[in-house]
Image (cartoon, rainbow, N blue to C red; front, side, top):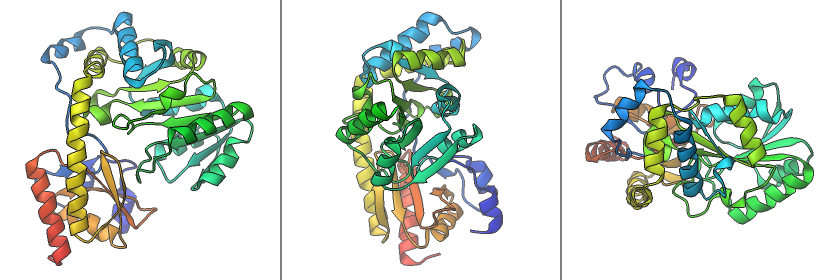
Length: 345
């Protein structure tokens, strides 16, 4: 990977057109495997289009919060904050919590570190449970982790997170658990609420394949949720997002069906990677992380094939791949991996 490419790499997944400007000969359409977004989009009712012509109704937001509380297992809709994507909620947390010392269990999603540094906090990144537990026991800290973790799929049990939450309550610190990829897991941290020192983030767009509508949720104690809603003000979520979110979250049969499909997809993806001689280091139902000394070379090779994956310039042996959306994308990826394994480069 050239220095110019490193300089122009987007901070997150996506931004495919920006990346592919460096590969003008690559075949189109491009295959975007750089995100952990579900390839299966929730079917949107076309009648929702009319929602763009009006302001959101308070009753609709309340209905969405009730649906989210039911879907995530929260005791009350008062504990739910609906926002225009979890990234906005992450950016607002430093304003609400007013902490100056933050410990993040990394390596993980960079948006957390960026938001707290932008707020002037002293941010530490730790990479082992012992160091993170030590931070949890310190007073007036904010401790952040993702579960399952992005990008390696690391999963901490609910029993362990309960202990961390209890220790935060004793020390007067906050535990923020980002569950952006938890919709397909059997357990979730929402079951540990109410707790005055536990904050949970849930993504909608990733699981339901609709990132463009910008919808996400914060789940916390009523007092903290009230503060967040006050900071966000009225009409934080668009009318179409309120309608689509409510429809999707109340359709439990759909998400259960997609979970099964993704199980099959991850089996296929990991088999293709293993057959190509690549080490699968970790995964969730929405992405797989591989470790290889040739991560940069493989990333460029796939880009030349019109396939964009997620490379990490600061961790040069890692490459993350999402799930193809259809058989054509599957065949292109599998052919490319076969060519890589055979040395046809």
